[in-house]
Each structure stands twice: as structure tokens, then as C-alpha cells.
Length: 257
Image (tube, rainbow, N blue to C red; front, side, top):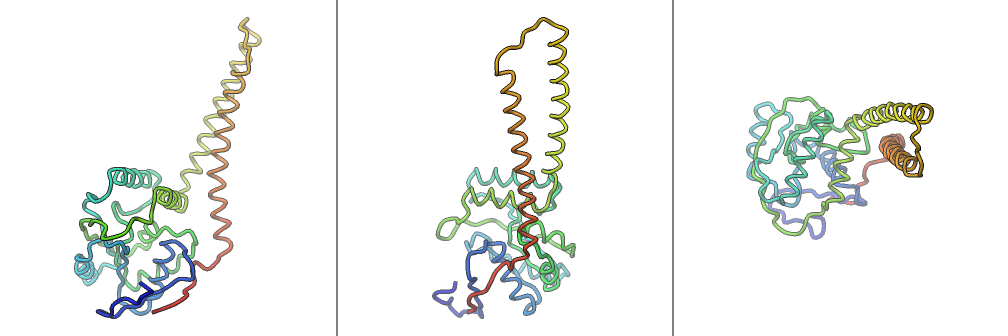
């Protein structure tokens, strides 16, 4: 979009960021840029899989008083079976964790200038716009569309990035994983008390012989794994606090055309 400049069929402006800061920050950069120049703005991915024919429906909903209009996919026939199933699992998991997001909605949406201004008040570095936008609370609507086949090129979102994006969304909007760690810790604390009681019973009230390292190493390894997993989850949240506390700029614009 930057080099060469796009054909001037309609007035266009293009932003080139100083480096790759991720698609969520790049999307926010565009919204920041147009915030004071528009009545509303529509965000759309560049892969042309979101149907531009529903632009009029977005604008019609805006004229009816909707400040936020979500583009929702009616079908995902162009996606692989794995991607459809994994997306379904992601939405189900987010609902279970208490995170309010719009089902089958990505980043195809219309925001009024007032909604954009409100969105800019969110200062977190770890952006997950699918979770932040519903928090704005303005009047909203939905426009359904059929997801199209990719026009050209290949997806820049492999499985690793999708999993990272999903995990960022979970840890940015839900403390349920931390609570699960507490529950798991409490459950295993009770189990350890029961196991200790059993060992003492065997030692003092029976003639059963308990030999071998397996009976020691198996529980030890298991509980050590649970502890490391718990520390990993807690560390993820501590890491986010560290990133947010530095309050670094989310992007720099290198060039505007």
C-alpha cells in the first residue's frame, strides 16, 4: 500500500509504521489517524476475505444511530476444517472464562468518531480489540456477511501466531486462569493431606511394606509439574503488568502518503 502508491481512484492515505508492531497496534494507528477526520470509520483486513459489498449496510446501521457495527461471518466455508473447529473452541473458551466478545467477529467493524475517541482512552500495550470494543458500551448492531476466498497470497497468521493471539486475549481479559491455579492448588493440598494420612496409617497400623522409589518419585514429579505450570500462568500475568508499567509508545509513524 505504500510502495508504489495506490491508484488514486478515490482519495486515499496510507500509513507506514517504523516497524512491525502487530496487526492490533497497526489497526489502532489507523483509527488514531482518522479519529478527528471522520464521522465513522470501517476497519477491514487487507486479505480481501471480508466482503466489501456490505459497506452500505454498515453505513445504514450507523445512520440509524449505531455507534459500533460488528461484521459477523455467517459461514466460514473458505476456512479449513481445523481453523473452523479451533475458532469455535476459542469462542467457547472465551465465553467460559467470562470474556464478552462477538461470536464469529474479527476486526471487520464500523466505529463512530465518538467510539474511536473512547477506544483511544484504553492505554494498554497488550491490545485485544475484539475484547476492548464491546467494553465501550455504545449502541451497537451486527451486519452478517459471507467470508470470501483469499484473493492472493498466503495467510500471515500461522498456528503459532493464532495461539499467541488467543492466549493474549485470554490473559488480557480474564483472571479465571489465576483462580483455576488457586483451585488446583487447594485440591492437591487436600490430596496431599489424604496421601500423608494414608502413608502414616500404613506405617503404624499395618504390615504392608512400601518399597521402591516409584511411590515417591511419581507423586513428586506430578506435583512439581503442577507447581511449574502454576508459576508459568502467574508469570504470564506478572509479565503483562511489567509491560504495561513501562507505558512505552505502541507505534511510531514513519511515513504518510
